[in-house]
Amino acid sequence: MPSKVELEKNEVKEKPKKVSKREYRKNLIDNREETINQIKKVKPKSRKMKVLTKKERKELGIGKDQGKAILSYARISARKAKSVIDLIKGKDLDVAYGILKNTRRDASTFLLKLVKSAEANALMNLQADTADLYIAEAYANQGPTLKRIMPRAQGRANRIRKRTSHLTVVVKEKKL
Image (cartoon, rainbow, N blue to C red; front, side, top):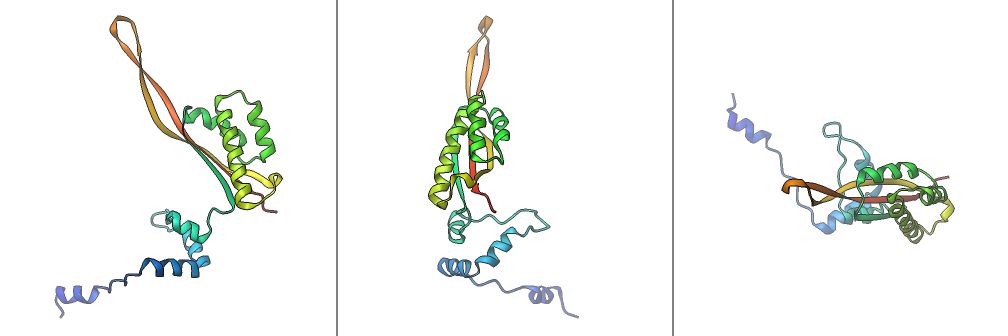
């Protein structure tokens, strides 16, 4: 009967050979469709997709079908921006412009500039017609909070929280 040490030696698998960066990129481009399908496939154990680096996304051509604009550290709370974002999500650009121009919220001015920038980025990347574009994604993430103090009676002080947010708008072309 074999000992535990012998069993462990038999179970040890060979380590995968190291691949250079150049070979890795070449394999990535050669097997483009297969790689994209692997990324999209959700693993049952972790339920998380593989995260690609910026260079890998560029080589695979992921994200070239969209125009994206990001505004970081906007001086508006994410909660207030989300209420306006929900109005324009999924709408055509003309409709979104109308909504943003007629909405009496501070977030609408930030988002109007963002949508214009995303549209310009999409026109440069896609050479698409403006009529075919719609807002595919829009979201507001919480940024750092600026903490200030307001003096109160009897030497006390209250904390003022000036919230910031990171706004993102993604514009894509309609698929006919």
